[in-house]
Every structure is written in structure tokens, then in C-alpha cells.
Amino acid sequence: MAEHQLDPGKIHFKWNNALDPALRIAPGDVVHCWTQEVTNGQIGPDSKAEEIPTVDFDQIYPLAGPIHVDGAEPGDALSVEILSLEPDDWGWNGIIPGLGLLSDDFGDPYIRHWDLSDGQTTRLDDRAVIPLQPFCGTMGVAPAEPGEHFNLPPGNFGGNVDIRHLNEGARLLLPVQVPGALFSAGDCHAVQGDGEVCVTGLECPMSFSLRFGLEKGAGLASPTFYTHGSPLSRHDTEAGYFATTGVGPDLMENAKNSVRRMIDWLGKEHGLSPEDAYLLCSLAGDLKISEIVDAPNWLVSFYMPLGIFRR
Image (cartoon, rainbow, N blue to C red):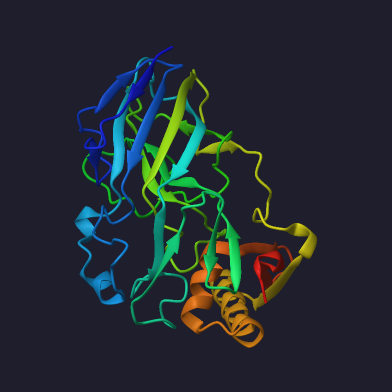
């Protein structure tokens, strides 16, 4: 068993199984990493909304790695135990034109900066306090298909899975695609709701430590994981939740309508602008399929924890 510090300069921006390993380790080893936020520093604490459309998409998703794990072969499962996750003291989220669940509703760029310095919570002015729940939005192994692959869509190899329950103590199992696995991680979030509906979680630089193992011949078809996380957000559950719904034959349209109705409610009840309400939905709300067995209509619910509000 050994511990390794991965050089922060050892990053890449696309999945590619031809990349040289940044580090070679043995099963049981621990690797300590730090990555920049999702734009690789193009967005900083002083950035304005008008800078968002100028972001170079060839420089987004800086991933620490790839890490070669000795003995990993296709058909095995790479075990990734999350030991620690420590955000830096600043993060952002915003609206990126053309992206997000409600891209047709929100066409202009928008940004909000968040203070993470107390390590436990962040605030939306004096209206809401959001407990932090850090995780790496992207964790995966190199895909079997040759060539470069953009990070944004996830795959059966993992990638941009944005599973907010991959917190400290969780363990992710990834189906190894190529010899050595070639694991990479980044896209760190200080907190995010299920769905990441505006396409940004609370994006931040972060230090994280991972322990690697192998399950030989596991034959996984897609990623699986163990977690201690609640199925809803880590908030004051005693206060309960307010939920909106979308009902109809199209799950995607139902999801959009449930979020639209929550944005309306946040404006009426808490005085949030549509833009701030959308951002809050992405950080604190949870999108769920409530019913999918009674054709022709399905039901999607969007939950907002009431305990975050201070007015």
C-alpha cells in the first residue's frame, strides 16, 4: 500500500485510451489530487456573466490522470473509494446559453459566485443557506473505443456521471475497458441537486483523495456504487420539502415543467429572480421520476428542501 500525490499539471480534457499514464499505482494505493474548476480557470472569482460565452470548450473539464492501475484488465471492476473531498473557498454556477434543461427559457448568460470558506455551507444572500455536499462530477476509466471522446456525456465507462451521492465514504465500481483502467477524475462540485438542471453544479477547485482496488472478473455492464447518502438532499429534513410536478406522456417535457413550476413558486414565495431560482434548483433541488407505470402519462416531481430558507 502506497500513497501518491498526483502533479496538478497532469491533466487532460478528452477521454482517450492512447494517453500516457500520469501515474502508475498498485491496487490498494491512495492517490491525492487537486483539480481546477470545470473551465480550468477561465471563470474566476471576478468573472462577469458576459465572459461565459467566451469560454473555450476545448479547455473545459480538466481531469486529473490518467492513472494506470497494475493488473486491471477488461472484465474487471475498478473500485474507487472516496476518502476525502475538500473544496477551495470559492465556486460559481451559472446559465450557459444553449445548455441546461430549460435552455429554451433562459437564453442569456448569468453567473453567481459562492463563498465556500466556512467549509460547511454557502449562502444565497440572506434568503437561503445551502449545506455543502462535495463530490467529483466526473470519474471514469478510459473507454474501449479508440480516439478522443468529449467528456460531457457519460458512458458505461463512467465519465460525467454527476452522481451527487459519491461523497466521502462512497465507493464507485467502474467496468474496466482497457488494460490498466486509465482512471481520471475532476469536474468537482461543492453541492448539486439531482438533475443539475441548469447544467452547472456549484463548480469549484477541489482537493480529493481516492483509494483504488480491483474486483477481478466482475463483468459489470455499467457503473455501480455504494453510498451513505440520503435519496434526497442533505438538508434539514424536519422542515420538509415543497414539490412541483409535471405530468404527461413525455418524461423530458414533464421534467422541464416540474422545474418551471418550481421557479415560479420560488419567485412568488421567496422573491427570487427567475435566474437565481433556476440556479438554486440546480444546487438544492432534486428531480425524481415518481411514476412511470401507468401509460400513457408519467409523473416527474421536483423537490425543494424548505429548511434552507431563512425568510
